[in-house]
Length: 165
Image (cartoon, rainbow, N blue to C red; front, side, top):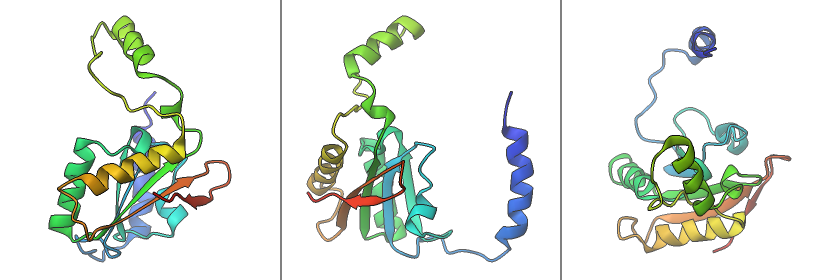
């Protein structure tokens, strides 16, 4: 069963609340947040953000990948963001597997050899934040004056804890 019809109905109710005011293209806070696709993270609510406040970039594990950097460069150079927040979380699905086991599983289930891919699993959530912050700091595409911060969001309590580099 698809939930799409439910989404369309919910969207009709949302439109009434949204209003017709035009929001600027550029995020008001000049912040881009790199985070996980996990459905337990309502990033805007958890950080007190409203529509138009920040770019929220999501992928599995909230990892800084080449494509994430591509999006961040566009966010900075075209949309004026000057700060990046790396926000990972507790009990992440990226902590539940290892590359070799997962690639073997995909080969068996899908008949596809992905042994050359890194799905970026991790065991220590704070260390994964530090790693991603370091990748951003070392990237020639992220200017030195861009502020880079990191935190871990606890999915059980909703509390965000800062991670120092």
